[in-house]
Image (cartoon, rainbow, N blue to C red):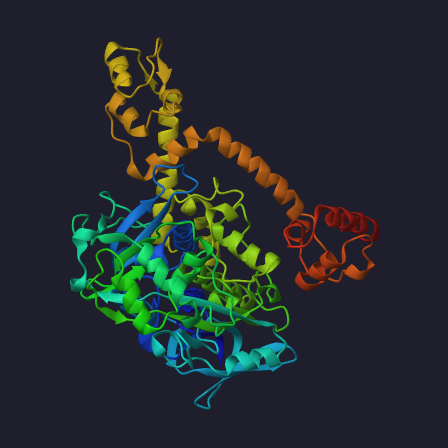
Length: 619
């Protein structure tokens, strides 16, 4: 008997397994192929816009993805570094082999965690409560909780040209029976699609015809707790090329031959990561599209053709690749394809990621309709935490939209549902100035500590950083900069106006053109690196941050207005039929949650509040 069984060894499965085992739950991770644990079947990267902040949040809560990315990457850079702090985010090129090997080692040495190679055929459920699983090898295994993290393997089909055959990523055996078991239990399933581009042999590329894309020349880290140790000089470069008129013509002349436009594909693909066919058809006014050439491994010879996901037949993939600068003689080592798979309707879930219909059954990752390794890992972590907290009879962890991008992600999934693979974007977060890369640890480390995933070493590093931030802020408040000729000459080099009287360091730092490094220069002192960025942002954006916090407080006031679990929405008068149906389906816990459900309008919320005041005056 296990406390928790995790089905699937992808990024969601790894975080779910590690979090439950580290919370002292006897955990079994069951996966079809141990060698594919933490696999990256598509892009060789971790992070990206918004996603990089999610990785920092995973790390702050005690997850593994950030640490593993830091020791496995080939190149790392800060995106949007010249823009405001609310949209800055890390992205690294990961070594696919090293990342997976390191994660397997971490799992294998974790106490309370076993790994088994098999496929799950059926869920055992009694009285709407999970009791165990049955495997394809015929074994019955009992457990108290199950977390399904099957990624794109659930009843999966590989599609290319007019060809369609059963298979998971890399042609692995898909999970053929679990989806049917879930349907028989009354869970609503959806059919989704994603895809991957071709890979080409690295020494067949003419890099002189491409634009080089290097990593940043200063140290960066996903981990909030450990300093980076990689060599800045030895980072591998990426390269940029473009599609052109010839590329576009080949696609438009052969749409009937690709799986996407031939009617072969049933599933809905990701809006924000479309195939190259989709890009050309939907954006015909664009003369070209960016294509990134990214290394997949330090020692391998395959280059990932980013931005070129395709379902064209192999002979046309050859023509398309050879039409672009730098790739005229490129040899394809792996052809692109689309993959269709089953996913659960995410409105079937509670905010804890437990299914509403089956007690003790959780789902996380692409099975919930998301896209991306980072979103999957975040859900796995939360599912593992909540399954463990439930076994300990403790309150669940539900992150709010003003606390974390992870909170935004889960809130969107449960309240808005999905019609296509969901991708996290900074624009989805209304409080993104509060949810920054630089303050992920300040927002979430105490929560990670409370649930038992932040050890003493990490916690002491965190507390020391908080002390340094307070110390630096106090120092800048009381330390003045004198109006000397030397000071004003330096300010003029920064295109900043002179000072006529002595001013506090904080007052000078509020000027847009003045950076905290400039204050260091003027005071002839070196500040603590762990505190500088946080203090500078706090000072420069103080007014904006305070305004956003007030807006968040208004939202939180709605979150405090609870909705009774036994409410009968058919008795709420004067609300729209769609709103009534959505409220009945989602069963929101608070007015705040209800207000974010797609199809529920402000007028419906007003009527709901009137009803609650009348029928539940003491709630």
